[in-house]
Length: 342
Length: 295
Image 1 (tube, rainbow over the protein chains, first blue to last red):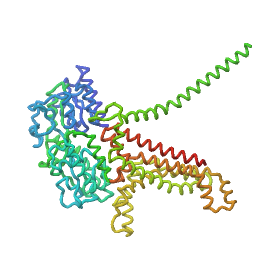
Image 2 (cartoon, each protein chain N blue to C red):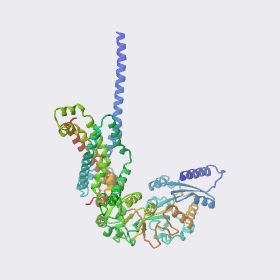
Image 3 (cartoon, rainbow over the protein chains, first blue to last red):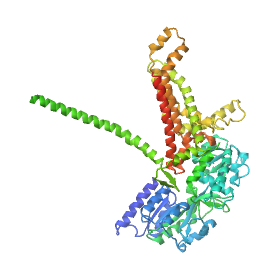
Image 4 (cartoon, rainbow over the protein chains, first blue to last red):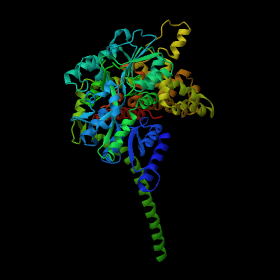
């Protein structure tokens, strides 16, 4: 509801600003397409006061919706959009983004160490140009029961540990299971596996299946399974969201990012090719990279932010930014074979 | 003469109007199922002959999806396992439904319809909620285990109750029970009272009456009940996922994954056509049995 009224208000403001030059409102306008929680009304208001501009925010619900809106208008309907690094690639390929001038985003130099050198953040740069600036993330790790597992697990291999036979809750998705298995095999790029590597991972996953009680699909389902069964270890596909769901239900659990690396999604701000006022867009990104907003972002959404440390990852944790995999259909087929194996 | 002709024209008009009305209603009657049932099925059939190459659907007719089904070691065993599972579901559901339907049919007067309705009420509940409830009962920290532990009947929780194929069969049988009760109830209810009286008058015992009169007369409904449950269980993909654990892979889940994860719609369509063929066989067998034993 809040988002709708916000949207209507800002849409009305946008109409007022463009249609009547003499009407109250500012000449400058910033049009943002983002996920709920990424451009909260209090931040927008503060930014509007600072930049003397109007900001309109449209919220999206799916990755495909972002594509439809940005590609559909060839980038002309929005100045800025939030997108994860895996999805970002097709926007860059299609020429729908505009590179940043980092000097205009000074707060970027104050971000957490893993986000400071953008050349080390896979996917955000292309041909030496900064195409997107990291904003929020969450990892896929392991949840364990602190009453039953005395020593915190450190490796994905705990999913295979016979000590927890029948007490492991798996996640029902081929892509991520092959990714984490590849990480345990020491493969540097777990998103581009050769056929031999896929076959080897498949054999390993069949072994893992023998240790698993059941595979879940949603965070709520995992919680219900945890409550009614003896479960020690959970493949936490939904990261902090899942941790919060379980803690709220009174579970005694903790979360770790395994040492081989935790796959993690990373949402960024990208400027469209149709950006009207590039400097204004850059000043918004600079504005939301403040420590206070980062803290609020994490507290409100549970996701990690890029400026203050939060629960998603400790400073030393190895995160592997999610990319599109070599062949999703093949992984889904192999995952079916794993599940169908006796 | 002219008067006669006038009547003829009126009659002709009337007849023409009635005929065009009949044609229109017939066309409509065919059109609706044609557009909403037959056409999608045909589109599905056509899609099953396409294929996917590097994430893109190629609109070229080929048999490769069907060849893959028969050649890939993963699919045929799961298909057979699913058939056996669904047969078990049909047998369990009918075994429980028959006594219930019998009891309902033997209630005097209109009360029996009220009771019959009571057995249909579970169908109004969300199917997912029922599965969640069953999981809460059968889990190792579940209701059943807690009661058995509290009563001292067991010392450690029973783990074989859930997350295996037996649990899938049992859960499906419970969920589909109303579909089995109704056809049997209707068949039993239609048996005239005087047929049973005649059997008793001729000196038949209760068991003989059941075996020689009631059972043959209710066979049609029983076969229909078994078919209903078998066919409904075949298409299910939620129950095996939720109570089957790591061994709950059924054919329905493989089809589901082709649409949800693999984005291989043509292959999913081909697998669905295979399943549809099995359903048609099941229906043909039902037709054969019920024709031979008309009630």
